[in-house]
Image (cartoon, one colour):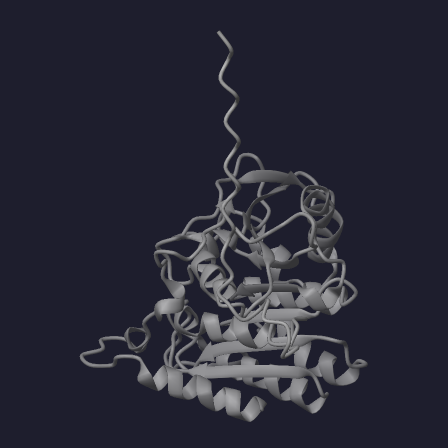
Length: 337
């Protein structure tokens, strides 16, 4: 099954338009599941707010929350937390996660889930991350996301989760929780799940920085040496990602700084250890173009076995997942003269 899914990834990439492409990234374009469509229920995005941090004193984390239209406080929802949240929530960006959630949920291909977009920590004097500056030069992102300690896991588990659980009905089952990100945000997501598998069992990684920024290149060895953890991991990367070549003349190659090679090593280590792992290798650069195409399929695979009835006598899950309109209020009786 995993080999078939990897082949499906290659075929999906091959179907993308390539005519006149000036860059490998031009070969990728989003599909219909990443666009908004009339009639598909759309949820509510909260305003950005700031979460003070004790794990990193003096910093705060900007975050916002997407609640799908089908959410009900009577039924605990699944949870997905995405690092570098500004990139995933951007309605004009490459990823457009809210549209993906809306469309897949409408067709009952994923469970109802609360989606949280969180940015790297910053001091009050530092600017919030943006589409052009993700925070490597202006925030605490390099240390928080790339270090292999458990400090960033404490931000997510000890600081963010209690706030979310006080506001929403969220499942406590780690099988119903995912964490993901891109580049350094991807290794940050993996590190949270690696350190806290009691909280998260699903990991989504695009162009993951499993490289020697803060020692992340050792993960394949750590995976092989440790007992297998109950994680499901989807890795996506392109052969034109950063390849570890220096700018010297002649260039020198550092395999520990080769993004694509390190993603391949991650997949191999996870597979050898018996993890539930899938992957997509394309021709993309260190960008989100390839992920913009593949994100819906990555989501389907991560959430492929969420609980739902398959009783032939029960048709409750066979139709589109719409939202019932509230019953009209009864008109007040006319006042007697």
